[in-house]
Length: 277
Image: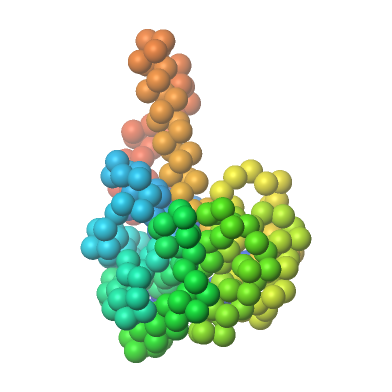
């Protein structure tokens, strides 16, 4: 098992060149399976974890998230990026204190977003958003500076799809010390390339949460350095579960069980040290 320092060095190196996919497990089993498939890094998903607990996205507490990050970071060989939402605090001092706690879990990276949680005013005002990024940066530096810090602006997924404002915020976040920039919800080639160009040479994370027609190769050619899938893999699993359960409840049949992975195969994978399946 690599040390935390080794994972953090490896994660930072992944951001220096090329393009990598960072899928999002929602528990230790899915993290270990993704590791076995050969991915180089993983990221938590706030929605996937919340739904696995029977909660809506956003209702998981800070301490629950910290415990979740600690478990995944300890039980996977791969660097882990934490979806740390809005830092579980409004003021910069609170964000900084919570970021320090997140760093202590052993994660290799973490993200802070500018979503307020209030649908009537979904984004922190510009100055406040930048101050929160500066506070997170300072907390990471005080903890050693080796955790990769991603700053997110959420307008495209919270009813404010303004590309110019998105770029203004990402550029300000880069100036405030973010290592990686992220605007979930941008989808077109024009939007993606505009964001990549605007914050270059800093790396950009792209969320792939639906079928788009883009391959990893296509996305790499746009200049994106990192691809994540958010809660989509968790929703894929939940979708299959719901469809199968509904078939049993409504039709009294079990046809959707055809072709599923066997218990023996999963036992062999997890019992064999979670190597490539």
